Every structure is written in structure tokens, then in C-alpha cells.
Amino acid sequence: MNALLSLAKKVPLWGWITGIVIILILWQSLSGWAMSRKLYSMVLDNLRQDQSQAIKDKDAWIKSCEKEIGQLANEKAEIEKKKAILEKKDIASTAEITRLVGRNNELQNRLNNIVTSDDPDRLLEDLRSRGINIKRYPR
Image 1 (cartoon, one colour):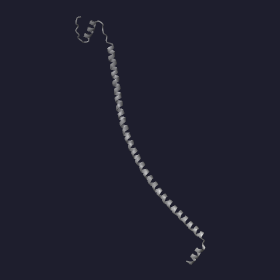
Image 2 (tube, rainbow, N blue to C red; image 1 turned 90 degrees about the vertical axis):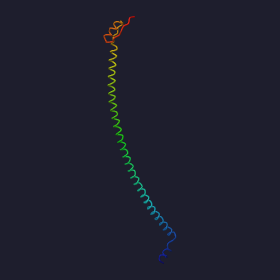
Image 3 (tube, rainbow, N blue to C red; image 1 turned 135 degrees about the horizontal axis):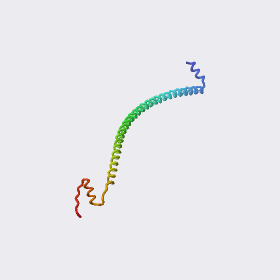
């Protein structure tokens, strides 16, 4: 022990200060490295957790999109059925309109082809020939 004490007395004060500063710098760098490693691990764990949560959220979003796509496909099928029904009704309406226009034209032609006489006696004879009995009163 005397040998250590005599050796310590031979080292100047600036040597002791330099040694202590070197030890403190090494301690600081080692503790900083350990702290940065710990922080890195924490950030990495947090990133992994966020990534797994993002994957779960993505899967839930995909399922909701698939469900919505199914609903939209059903709505599309219903709309197509309604469209087919309306097209059939439109075709039937068009045919009915065509039939009624033809009937109207026929009646218009018959109306235009009615020949009336200016002579009242002749008019009465025409009506009687068609089956309409009209009595004529003298003037």
C-alpha cells in the first residue's frame, strides 16, 4: 500500500485532473451510448406496434370496402331490374300510343269522309238508310 501511495504522490495534479476528466468522458459516452440504444429500442418497438395497428386498420378498411362493394352490386342489380321493367312498360306504352294514333287517324278519316247533303230531304234519307229514325215536322 505504501508503494501505491508513493506512486500517487509522484503523479502531478494536472495528471490526476486529466485522468478524472478522461474517466468522466468515457463514463458519459458509455452511458450516452446505452441511453441511445435504449431509446432506439423503444422507438423500434413503437414503430412495430404502429405498423401492426396500421395493418389491422387496413384489413378492417378492406373488409368494409368489400361489404360496401357487395351492397352496391345488389343495388345495381335492383336498379337494372327496375330499368328492365320500365323499358317493358315503355315499349307497351309506345305500342298503345301507336295503336291509339292509328285509331285516331282512322276516326279522323271516317269523319272527313262523311258526306252531307245540303238538301234536308236527302239528309233524312241518308240517316234512315243508316238505321236512324228521324221524324220530319213540316215547316
